[in-house]
Length: 304
Ligand SMILES: Cc1cc2nc3c(=O)[nH]c(=O)nc-3n(C[C@H](O)[C@H](O)[C@H](O)COP(=O)(O)OP(=O)(O)OC[C@H]3O[C@@H](n4cnc5c(N)ncnc54)[C@H](O)[C@@H]3O)c2cc1C
Image (cartoon, rainbow, N blue to C red; front, side, top):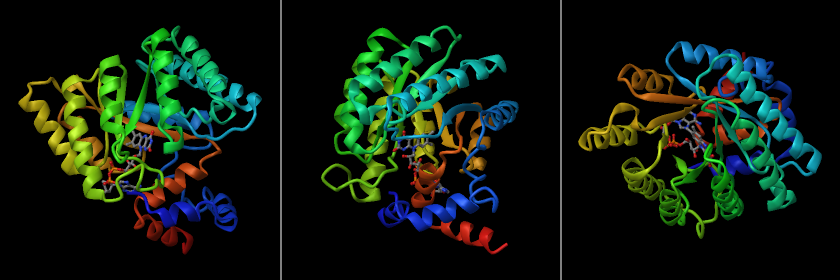
């Protein structure tokens, strides 16, 4: 579970100014972020491909508050997909956030921008757009928008977070719809009315939902760095005689490279979530909050 104290520290102006100022120059951010430009991200996607790893490009940015910014984000996402295709990356894959596409301005704005992205993506062979899941205030609207978009476009999927109490029910709905799901534990500070406060409950929910997803999901994505859960996933795939490419393992750039490589060596599909762009602050702070030991990493770099 992410540390609520660390997540709330992310809203402190002094902390933000400090991290933004020294993030790249002191090498704090490069571990988790591919770079501030699309070119940097494409370069990393190319090297990952050389190592047998696929990429999910994520142009960072969330919570825009003007229609202009939301439309610009949609155009920029299309540009990223086209750039991946131009590099001959097979089946280019993008992760997007609906608050970057204008969800705070209304469901209709985000739905329209997502629709124009999916429509453009249709002309790119094998292109796929995964709609990330943000805080629980957005869950219902995100599912509503993705389910409506899926009626017209089959190149869209979304994310479910095991820490939410509602997820078992949401999973059944998406399985029935045939919508591709990426299963994660969840990265936001949530009230206990919405999410399990204990890690053990989250892990149990993850395994329970993963079992359903692997059995009934369309191109399921098991997104975790939890070695015990990965072991369970592989065990289930063996027991149910699913081929190695029946599911995809997804991990974040900069986290558990050892596991990413060993899964590839065992013949599984592995996709690395590759964030890039100047708006890296919130994403970076969520990665720190997931693992307070990462603060030691920051302090070590700052003292260099
Ligand atoms: C591909 C992908 C997409 C994601 N998309 C979303 C999304 O749309 N919405 C959302 O809420 N969350 C998303 N997440 C984040 C997710 O919710 C978790 O916060 C994150 O994956 C950490 O949980 P874990 O499953 O790895 O398990 P944990 O139990 O948190 O961690 C297991 C092990 O992984 C390693 N580890 C985990 N996190 C870190 C870290 N930050 N730094 C160093 N080591 C670490 C440690 O070794 C740890 O013991 C995504 C994660 C992945 C992999």
